[in-house]
Length: 116
Image (cartoon, rainbow, N blue to C red; front, side, top):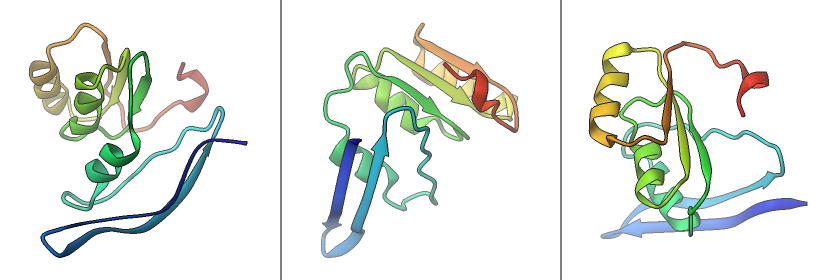
């Protein structure tokens, strides 16, 4: 049974289609990643389906700018784990978010067995 189900979600801004009929299901215990280019609609989709994140724990794999994880923290997430291999980028994300409930892993691969 899915804990989250999204069916044919679409969104446009000023006549430009940003998200076009996205469907997905997430099941208990699954770890899922949403990848895409800057401006590709990841944050828009997140905003549409996230709802209340109070007490949520989130993984921002391949953190890059950290936007996804920082957004989750700003919406009340209890904890965010950022994974990013570039030390300079990790430092910038830390400075931007300035929170105690975040964890950073500087690595280029994820040991999925040990993520809690």
